[in-house]
Length: 604
Image 1 (cartoon, rainbow, N blue to C red):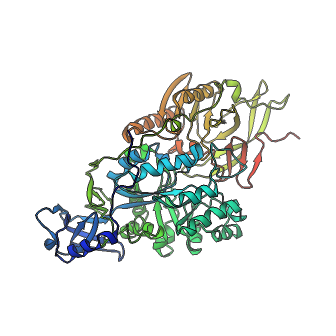
Image 2 (image 1 turned 90 degrees about the vertical axis):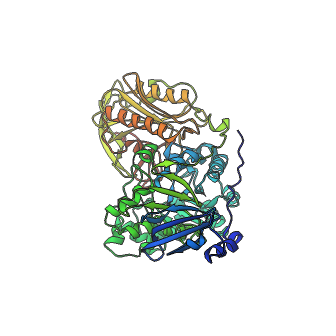
Image 3 (image 1 turned 180 degrees about the vertical axis):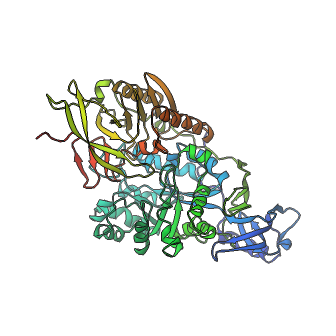
């Protein structure tokens, strides 16, 4: 079915200003009046009882103690019954693909949680399908009943020379996308070494964005806050979400950036950074809450931005400050303070009714002036794009794999070797660079203890390439393997296992189903999450995908893994812009130096 890909008709403030003025003055009726609530004003950080909100053409006309003069025969009256009226929640930085869902299904999953605005960076699909993939994500985003703005991806590949992607994004691509209606800025500038070194392409992308008057997203994953950080900021990125400690948040805000602190499925970086506000007393208007990466299980079972706001409050943040960080702060950062982020005249009528500011139950969600969710249930349709065949045929790894493809050969005559090993860190994106003594059997390095094998299987151009290395921290036992075509950011196929035959089974299974995640143990498939769109997403309902994701988590546990949200750790093992060690199709990457390391230390 073909869809109209133009943005849903939604009037601009100037177009409807006469009607808004007349409604506010009591000369014309409102379309909707929310009656008798506590007005949470994020501009002044106040909760003001006994107020009404009058809405016309999907925008707020006025907020008054009594809007009875704005009620006409056809006006819908929503009774707030003394509940808090808060702005719809905004996610300042996120990747829809991490939810394993298309934009439509992601919107359907998060609207009942009170998310009415998202700033998304589709750099996952950019690595698989290039600018065409970004366009598909952008177009479906514009079809939704809530606000989804797209940041044009900046780095595909994320680190040139360190990996090979399905497609590359150029400065010309960025300049073209800046003219699209839903593009709000440039996605996270992950190539921080390139930016600090004044790489011409990176600077050209930033320049195209700034000339368009749009926001440049940041990604500075290095712990070095000295000259390289200063050089990075000088290049133009206006925010950063890669901080993990209080010093990171403070450094970013002092340099004029917005510190985006995230709570995703596996990233727990709010508690360690929000102390810059709660204990050090810095201005909270320079801090923004975001999720970055949330998989479907988290969305269905735990929530979205409502979960982040609750967590910030639990970490000692004043509820009104936490709400600012998820509404007006975000809107202001992207130049949209006059459009979203507060319950004030002219803004889009994105409103949540909740009976408690601390526990934040999401009881009624209004977006653009109409009810979109009630008591956790979606009340509107989220239209789907007709995704083309090219987006569903992206797993091209060549000939079927065998156990021999996953062998790591040891030097002749050795019974053991010293290996460079990727060390997984629970609840954080960074890894550790470890060294482990590994046993050798019949000339092949064998998994041992908590160290198992990891492989990156090329899946974009059918080269047949397989890069093998070692990883520690998952805790797997027995004969098992887990494979995923979600492998940030190059999105080849990551296979982790304790047995090479199981690794081959898992890889071949994903080629068969067109992408996704699978877990094998002793020749039996324990779990499968099909992700047929770019090998990253499903267009099935979020609950269906979440159920399969829950089964995947249970299978990981059955194989001995005890890490929290270990799947997210698995999917990031190829992200060659976050220290310390990562794997790519070109080898084992030391992200501290952006050099390749041998898997096995040379013999002396």
